[in-house]
Image 1 (tube, chains in turn green, cyan):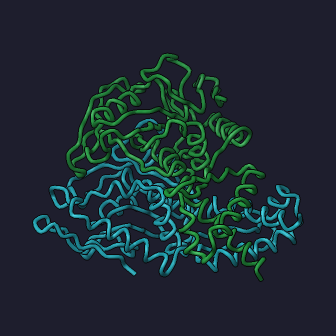
Image 2 (tube, helix red, strand yellow):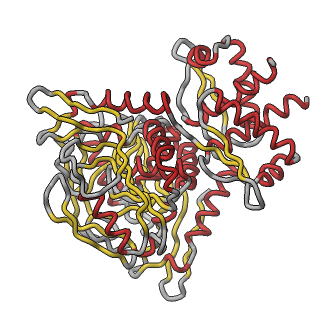
Image 3 (cartoon, each protein chain N blue to C red):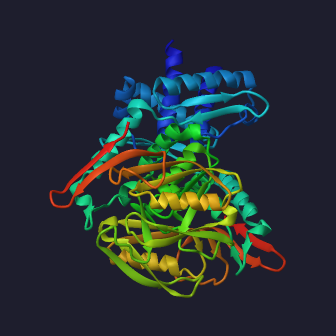
Length: 269
Length: 269
């Protein structure tokens, strides 16, 4: 009987921890919920951690002290990371993705929940050392990607709007030049979206010249936040010099040939 | 030793199942991955199912036959559902959310991953009987909500764009009247986003007159898809008669009083 109860409790603990990646749960939370001593729960956590690590499914982190607890870190490294990126590059090479103008249709992939969950974990693993407080992106296509990155970090997402919307209260706006259209555009951010001093990680789906990322960074600084890094799913090989420095890209797009229908895109290790 | 290995396998199985809600995994997938007989895995699944149900954390569903397998259904019902909606209504009543014009600032809540994951589960639980193939929403604020609903269903998300974008290939556009602005606007959908005959569930964050939802429905029909239902997070009590029929709303907004700063919003059971 006791044995059955332990395995069932471990299943429930695994579910609760995995369901909220990076969320720190005090042991007392589980202790109350399951009516179990903290010492017993600590043993359960050792078992869960070993199992997750053994099968390469992430890890548990224990934080000591009064404000401590345990959290699930959905780290995705090595082979598990490269498999996701290889698969994505493979899908992006499908010739029917080429749209007039040399653009690549990738909206279908960007809106697949399971795939974006994995990409979010890759960003979290590569960029956790930047210790962001907020994830920021610009509408529209990058939102699911940025949202799943925010989920992997257990952080709120902030969305920069194109143009200036009126339904969100006082906002700041800036002009920027998008690399793809070469036109001056406006983007804006509600003032209440970010507190002064917040550490912001920019996430976007695509970077060519970096004008959009630079616009987001300027906007974040305008409201008193600090940009600690930039992550993009795909960066183009040309131009080599981007308007933002020190960005992290998961895939590099070398060429889209509209005539031969060949797309050269590769994971960055 | 055997005992340890079983509990570790059960942890890993729980993690893999919970991580992809509604995804059907053939038992042979786990059998290969863990080098375990299917009969043993079936026993593991019974244990996991019992544990999840015992603690009200969703359930496992077993599908028999050659194309069968097992999947985790993140069902959120009864008290677990009402707790989420009560909490959300409580947050939405904060007086500082009132924006000039009687609008309600709720972007911060709509972009919180853990909260939207729970709302997505509520939509899945209430609307699974409609058997959709796709989830559809319109940019921008409803995207995380619709995306997490798509995740709970294990379905792709389709986004309707405002205006007509050129970077996604041939698209269809329609005009619609947004209930909040009373202006004629345009929304568009790439033709390749939905196959003919697809069963589409519309998800949005807010419904007043229902003009936006009706526009999405018209657009879906235009590309040959079938709208099987509409789910909105918040519907206004007035106008009572909406432009779409048979929608499901999780919260009802009765009044926003700009003078007394009182917001009357309640969960719908």
